[in-house]
View 1 (cartoon, rainbow, N blue to C red):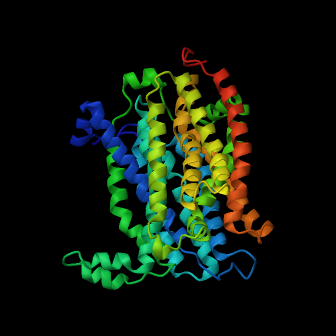
View 2 (view 1 turned 90 degrees about the horizontal axis):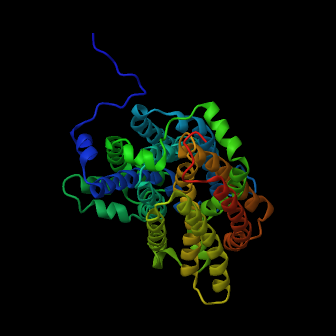
View 3 (view 1 turned 120 degrees about the horizontal axis):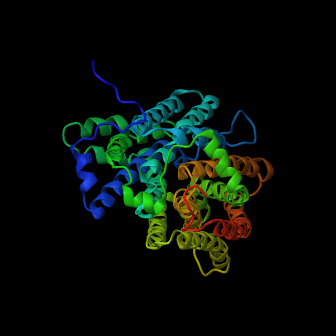
Length: 463
């Protein structure tokens, strides 16, 4: 009778996967970056396009909370809960289950967007909650394919740049759907194009997220399939970066006991950083308009700003990848992150002094926040695991930080609409920028001292 492989073993490898095992390093990096970038870029088409709509004049259940704020909070609560679930789920998942789990999560999110389109207004908040619930685990599943390699920084830089670019592109795509521009583009496609274009027309605010997701599903499937073809880290990777294995409950508790104070400092900084990054991301449309940039005259301004941010982050992460010593790289990561938060204050000072215009201020706040945010999502914990030779996976530490961070994002959204109703979103964002610069940079500097004392490239693997 046929024998079934246990789920903990690697699935059967196809011809493309076997070729990747012996491919030159540069080609492997290109394929892996394409796979990670495509997967997460496409995922953003299921998460962020709704933020392109303003839902003007609509409130949640007749309260003082705007409908858009309620929608943002609903999705963030689902996303934050997903991060808490992901602490266990993503740190334990076996290789054979990752790709099909990725597909299942995104299809569930797209179904929730269909519900968002058809349900009455109060239930639309619940629909976005169920949209965020599966999407929070996508990041951890993708990182599993990339961590523990000598090229992990450059692979994760490609992954991280996906959500910076995707945030702008998918929102601009959503705005184009609502303006009818995408429908016009479809009419130029032979055969089915005119039919699709005529059917789309100008898409409403509530149908726009679901239609956007449909456009990006093929790219997501291609990215997830390519990720599954990547070979495991080889012997040289393991020797340099320490082995990465699924973590048991005991492993997770041992990690937290060993690095408790440092994780508190990092999570405090990340609590406010995530809230800041999320506020900027969700209300870019409104902030740019308050700064005087009307959509009619600046249709791709968000994509333009985020593309410049991406270029800056790529340069910084490439520099980090070039550092071979794990302890030195860990120090460099902290320096880059702290510089990013100080850039928030510096750029705001220049903006208030009239040296920078609104576009460049928004671009530099994006660059500063992402210079601090991106390492949290990959490089920082990748190097921390390597420098300390800690047992387990960087995915666990990433999800501990993420669960705290997205919980903070919910609180900040409520604080703005309930405690600071008279403050404009631009005014609130500027005040938040000053606060994060001071508190975040202090926490990161203290965390750097803590973890550098804990790290030692020569430590044995069981220390």
